[in-house]
Image 1 (cartoon, one colour):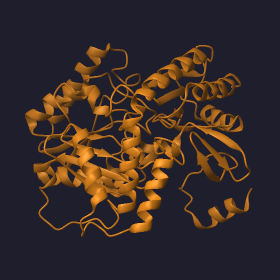
Image 2: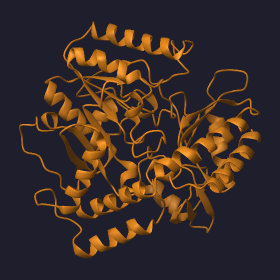
Image 3: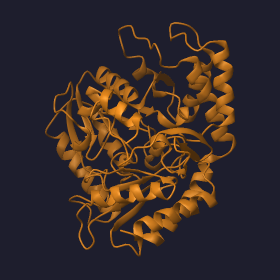
Length: 426
């Protein structure tokens, strides 16, 4: 054990998880690689939990942060802030939401908190629909709408939450159905649920469930839900904290796979837009965003330095078509991993889109989750020079792969080779 690990254990809460039997200290990074305090280099397939979206130490972002720090680092939302307005203009235009207003926060958790505040205030109701197997943050209100027991430490809540089927395609009572019948069954479940309650404020859903193991419904499910929600006046919140900014390759936002009835009423974002800087935010139609009837500001949300980073990072993403790269390289990677999985009995499923890929592990010959196998592969991948994540609503048995969107074909192949060795050694 390192001295830093002992110091960590002495002052940091026990519930702050660390990866690996011997935790590592990451000291610096460049491109798609990071180095630890021992000088070991790793190919980063997790990006600080889907946050290093473009690349480590991206010169354009580093330059923007340095230049802004030389002018002013902080002022708060009580003053006009040019970088904040510039980033808000770009996000509003990209969001697809008409008459969009943007409010910046410091994290995805705070963004979802704000979305809940807006939805409950606009609808004058504290009832929320959420998806089973979901995760929306670690605050008191975000925990209360999280449908994953591993990340929900209390049943106390300021909200009344009702959970809906549909976020997990290959498990649960509707798993055996075709995609079309699956959607029909989930819509019927939603209709039935709404028959037993009233005045629901909103449905919040991740288009691809992140912590839940990168699982998602068939395309169009949330569009079908929207028909039901609209009849009841219920808002749709799309949690794009992990799926946004082109990570899925096929779409810029995850909700666009479900756009048959238009964009969401509220969209939340965070993680990748800051490329490591603390940026979160909410986009909503003006009538919803402006519904609050009390004063509100943000001390740190929209700070000049994080906004400068966001503008530079978003510009790089768009100018270099990283969404297209995620589609191309991610498509090659997922097919390569499926080929590997065909010879590994412990792999139940390889799923995902773009550079958002999950490998679910089970005890061979069964459908029983195998968290120990996931932990073993995580360790073996690190030993092979590859950092990945893990998650999943069924006992954390899913390997999560989400590298920076600038990943090259050669790097994808190298990562797949490390994973192949780790999986075959199970």
